[in-house]
Length: 239
Image (cartoon, rainbow, N blue to C red; front, side, top):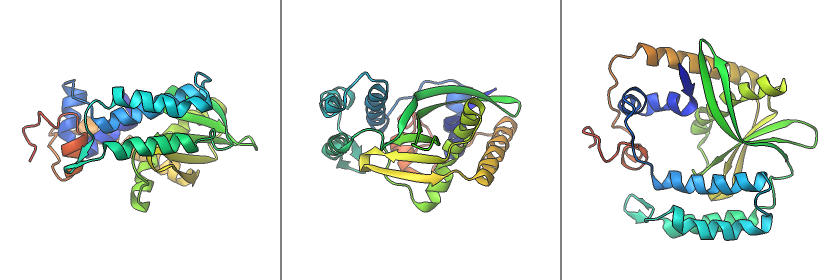
């Protein structure tokens, strides 16, 4: 079986959504938060690959925003479209390259062994500092994580670190989340013990998925249900 970080976390976010996506293979619908993230990811990828110049990034964002965001970004009744636009302009106006790092890989796709299964992913940016240390960076449209959420969210980059070790023969020195909407970099020193815990978490999650018989809905997270779930407009359990 093939797994990814999003597939593993989807099982915890809502087993029923997991079932519709990965078991029944029902096509859901995306959301504007994802569209916004894809837009910024695309611009940063093209810059990393030399397809866009630094001075072109603001214009590229402003001209692409209207095409990518074709309806208002609404959250809990509030229109956030102008705010998201302004924050994107601010990020690219302040951006002066990848913070002194040398890009090695942009949107690096990998497939590795994880137990008896395969694990796939895409690392937004693999970079190297001036001492030859590897840094992996994930671009996030979300706001800065709380301390509790950071530990949980960092599992993504710890799992990706296995791919780095398999390719480069060493683990990354640091793991970064680039919260571009807030123009903030969350930096974590690589922790070997937590890496091992994360690998075990992934293996335990796979075991739980493969043993699961009842994929019950999770209605507790109203934001996920109302704005992020791919089945938010076709779910019979939505409250």
